[in-house]
Length: 290
Image 1 (cartoon, rainbow, N blue to C red):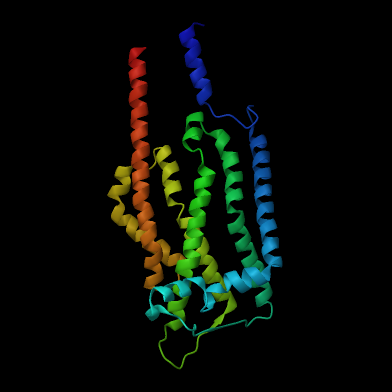
Image 2: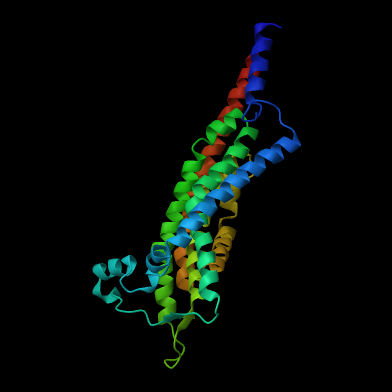
């Protein structure tokens, strides 16, 4: 084998996906490895769930029930901007109508809180399972995926908790079809709303990451995203309506930043396509030289 053939073989071998151990793995080996990744991810969620369950005074009293109090950070912030937006009190009370309601809601809320806290580690475990199946070039291009996914998720969660949730609660608690109707909200309805808004925003903020990976495999192009821009607005509004209370204000508050992320995703897809085209031209040039 001459030098040129050796170089070609090395390039081919370096581009093939390999396992973490560098050995070829069978189906059962992959399933076994996947099982341990799932077990570690579930254990991480369980640990944070137990912590949230034990620290109920902080998780419930200050975090989950925070937007239901007039001294919440967001309300105070808007009050400092303008006295018109000051909120003295929220016209509703929370109540429990089922004997097991508070206990089951405590468990459900702890699991949701545990998942959000463990999300970076859960994604890291998923990435550790998927990464060995990628080519070296793909792994290099997706370097730092865990960091960016975790960052976008955190931004989405904070956005949903500090902006969407309090504004939605304030709007819905003050909305009345008749002054004689009192807002006595069940605790399960309140906690579900808070969880859906915060977790939903965190997941929807993953749009640039999803577009990045789909653009890498050629399933999404900037031309395709531009052609379906109008359709995407409808989809974004529909998705926003699913995770928000039934009011237009909350829907728009989530839809607008997601639309901005969509436009950013178009730029990301265009950048990836440009790199792919340059790589193809470079490969063709090398082939013609050989």
